[in-house]
Image (cartoon, rainbow, N blue to C red; front, side, top):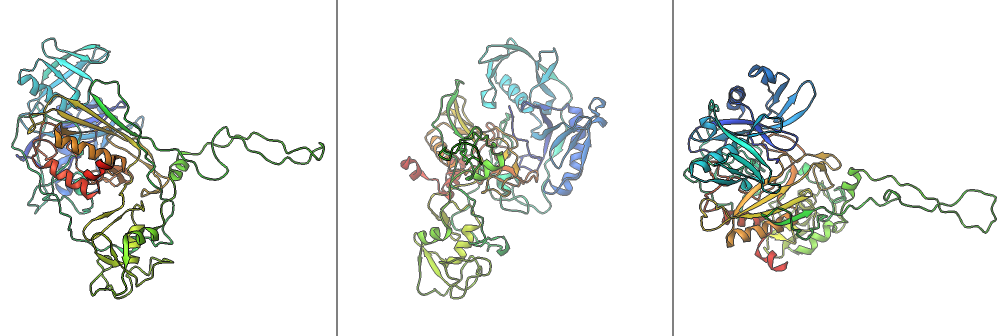
Length: 573
């Protein structure tokens, strides 16, 4: 099962000393740990530059694995792209780095393996090994791997793995060998707070780890070390935030702004029952396949053309010639999806009231006085909004140049909604640019730390590689979707269920993910998290991305509200 490549960036741990496990992902999405010896070599090479760049810059370095194990001579690890490259075939595989406490299974050199069809023993992922070891220590006889995304149970008495669907059994075994390499958690010089370099915590910072913000990991497998002291999440930023003026060159004028952006094409299909016993619901957003207007429609179409000169009688009608129309490319389909969005000027007029007299204050968008011409009049033109027109937003009463609001709107998603740059109040229904995908929900009886009185909700998001639409950074170009499916956890209690329902709304509005630049790998045109934090670790909170965390549910409700997703949305459904 495919999981997200773990960032190798600085994270939060109670102790600065941990063990590192490096893993590679096969064609079926399963992660495999390198041996402890190979991991030691990789970690040594990695740490040499990690202390210089802290994972925030381009890692211009390749690690030849043959130096650690001659049988791996064809392989190198390319750190800038987080891939394993086979030099003789060109095959590329994702790699990731997991950190565990020293008393975990990897720290003690414990590896669980299953017997393959060819008689070879294959190691489970490091997180699975750690989970199995912890469950064995607790005296559990049969372990269900569903919380980790696998459809298997492990019986410690018979040392067998059973497929819950087919009942097929395999042998398993527990091996003890050298411990995985001990390493240190490194923070940038001068950094005094908690450090997290995950995509969501770095979103919008552009400079490095953000302290004082609660954390979320790009890794998706839960790990189960010995209980540690929980890290509480910090309070979410309030609605009144400092506002940085827009960079003028980046704003598109009303006339010059592309008009290709469309309304939300991701109509939700009704939840369909799945085949797995733990399945609860599924939100699959396939979207309509609308084709470009014009002569090309679809393959197999017929078109009528006037016939040329012929010897037939003058009264004969033109013949109908069947014509095979070319099937539109994926790029054409992506650019054509959706319908026209409302005119930007209409949106500004809808949510503002024009003032006859400008108040004696600054427009916080252009930083000019409201009584003078808009600072964006040189790059934004409008037929209906004058350069000195001033308006007040109807709900929050904050005042701006209408041309500045227009420039701000045209630089965004142009979805018909408007967000006040001062107080973040949302007008209309805010939507995002999340690519099509699938959201599945499962329930099981295992409880989360801090929520021992209830079961657990497992959310699985899945998005595939695709072509960017007109609302994305590079329309018509491919985008990647690394590390899917991604698994997230909620307590199955009233508040957790409320968060789940709001996350469904956010998914339908395309707000969970977006297409941008990954802060963990630097990769552009890839699917990244979009400011709504999720818990991706079930039974550990060493990084702040798991449980227990008594503040998480309240914090994520505040983040959802900041995106315009509140309980009122549930009442409207």
